[in-house]
Length: 266
Ligand SMILES: Nc1ncnc2c1ncn2[C@@H]1O[C@H](COP(=O)(O)OP(=O)(O)O)[C@@H](O)[C@H]1O
Ligand SMILES: [Mg+2]
Ligand SMILES: [Zn+2]
Image 1 (cartoon, protein in one colour):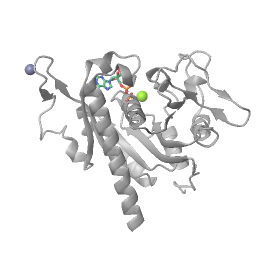
Image 2 (tube, rainbow, N blue to C red; image 1 turned 180 degrees about the vertical axis):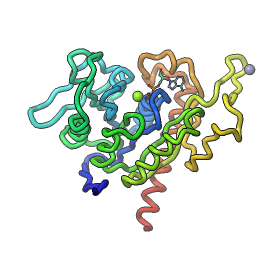
Image 3 (cartoon, rainbow, N blue to C red; image 1 turned 180 degrees about the horizontal axis):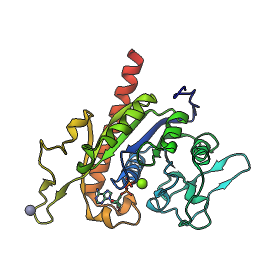
Image 4 (cartoon, rainbow, N blue to C red; image 1 turned 90 degrees about the vertical axis):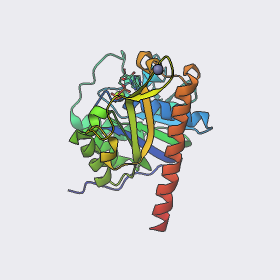
C-alpha cells in the first residue's frame, strides 16, 4: 500500500500547518486558534480547517458557531470570523451544533478531502489544520491529502511519556509532513500574587518534553482566561497570552523558513 499518494497542491495557499496531538484535551484546538489569531495580528491572511470531524470545536472558539457555511454548487464557502479568519468545519453544516456526526470512516475522510480540495479558500498566507487527536482514519486521510508545510505537536506534561504522542509524530514523518516542533501546553502555572512561573512537574522526570527530541516552539502556561473562555478572541486576550501566542507564531515562521531552506539545499 502506498501511504503517500500524490498530494493535491493549492497554489493560492502559501503554507499549510497541521496541529496534532497524541490525545484529546491537551489544548490542540486552543493552540490552533491562538496561532491563527497571532498570525493575523502579524498581518497574515489565515484560514482554519477543522479536521476534527467528530469533535469540532473551532467554530465556537472563533465565534462563528451561529453561522452556517454554504456551497456555490461546486465549492464550499468558508465562514469569515470577525478577525478575518476563514473557517471551515463540519459543524458549520449541521443544523444544530450539538448533533453528532454519525458517518463511517470513509465518509469522514471524504469530508476532510473536500475541505481541502473543494473549498474556495482564496489566497492565504497560512492555512491551519486542527487535527483530530491521535492517529485515526481522519488523521491519516488529512496527511495523505494535504501537502503540509509543517506540523506542530501539542502536548501536556502527562502526555509526553505516553507513546501516543510518538505515534502521532511518527505518522507525520511517515507521511512526509515535516515536524516543526513541540508546544508544551498547561505544563506550568503562573502565581497570581507574584507572577512567578512554576513547573507542574519536576525537570528530569518522565514528563520532560525533551525526551521527544523536538524543538520547543512555545511553553504555554495554564491560564484561567483560556480555561474559562467559550471562545478565544484576540482583542479580549490579556497581553501575556497575546505575547505567548505571538512567540509561538514567530517560532513557527522561523521553523518553516528553516525547513524550506534545508529542502532547497537538499
Ligand atoms: N493554556 C491553557 N490554560 C488553561 N486552559 C486551557 C489551556 N489550553 C487549553 N485549555 C482548556 O483545556 C480544554 C481542552 O482544550 P482544547 O483546545 O479543546 O483541547 P483539544 O483540542 O486537544 O481537545 C479546554 O477546556 C480549554 O479551554
Ligand atoms: Mg480539539
Ligand atoms: Zn507567588
